[in-house]
Structure formats: structure tokens, C-alpha cells
View 1: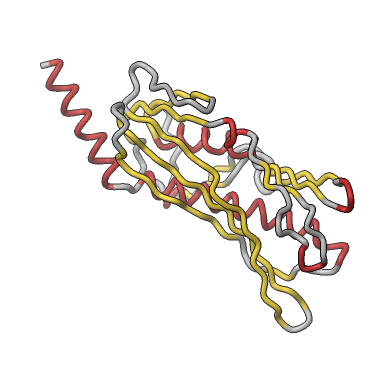
View 2 (view 1 turned 30 degrees about the vertical axis):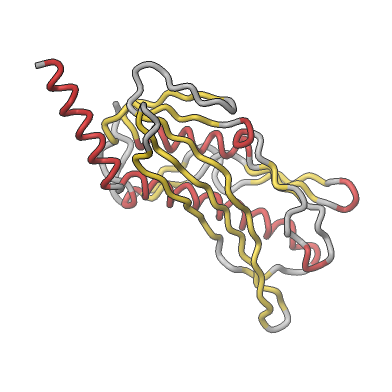
Length: 224
């Protein structure tokens, strides 16, 4: 496996920092999160975790759309939506391949453990929030995306789990004609930060590393 981790560099995955914005009905806006995130290598252990992991993506995760989002409610507009699904699928798959020796991807609402895998990893979309505070004449706003992750062994016993979020910088909401552009940048930044934080947490988890080591020792014992 080619080593993708180089010190003091940022690997750009797919389309970074982009969102497509389309006009919605009744004055609403649809923000479509594009796949891709940047990875700071000093957050990641240099060697992938020596495990074969099944990444399972539920139907809800693959098609996740936040409707009636709080975006724009400060101006009385609460019909905006954010389509996260394609970005969640791409980013989860990319991240898993960077973290583990081998990754198999399964989809659907029912998780059936595949032959030959050591563990299953299942992400879930937990929340999307927009927080704002008044500062002088402008509203300061930031977005937060939260995902939960559960890693289980073949018997369904939880090895590690956590809910991990990422928050954008807090910026001025801006004038009416600036709101959409600034919002899409913050959403993408929050999503980027969420996956960066998740990758760091999984890579540096002592419980996951210890489990991987125990599997290696067991397999070696069987061969001997």
C-alpha cells in the first residue's frame, strides 16, 4: 500500500471547499455539499491501522438532507435545505481507506457482516446547527456538523464509539446579497473539520490500535 502521509503537507481530496447553491421554491435555497476535504497529516499516525474494516453506509446517511435548516432564519427565511449525502459517502470512504489497511464498503439499512472483515465501522449523521450572536451592527454566525461513529467487532461488540463535530469559523452573516456565498463556505468548512477531527480520533484511538494488535497476535497464533 502506497504511503499517503507526508509530514508538513496537506492532502487535498477531491473538490475542496466547494458547494453548489440552487434556488429553491418559496424563497428557499438548497446548498449541495460537494465531496472532498483537506487532511492535515500531523493529525494522523504514519501507519494505517492493520485491520480489514467494513464501512457500512445506511440509506439515510447516503441521502441525508437537512430540511428547514436554521440558515437564514435571522432574516425570516427558514425554508433552506442542505444536501449532505454525496459528500458524506465520499468523505467517509476516502477517510476509511486512509486509516485502515483494507476497507470494504456496504450499503443499506441492514448491516450484514461480510466474510473476512475484522470489524465494522458505521457513521451516522447526528446534527447540523447554525449559531449566531449579535456583534455591533452585524450578526456573527458559525455552522456545526456532527457525526457519530461506531466500530464493532464481528460479534457486534463495540470497540470504540464517539460523536465528533466540526465547527466553522464565526463570520459576519453579511448583507443580503452576501449571505448565500458566506453560508456555503462555512458549511463546507464545518464538514471539512468534522472529517478531519474524526480521522484524528480514529487514528489515535488506543482502543482501536490495541484491538488491531490483538487480531494480529491471534492470526499469528493460528498460523503457528
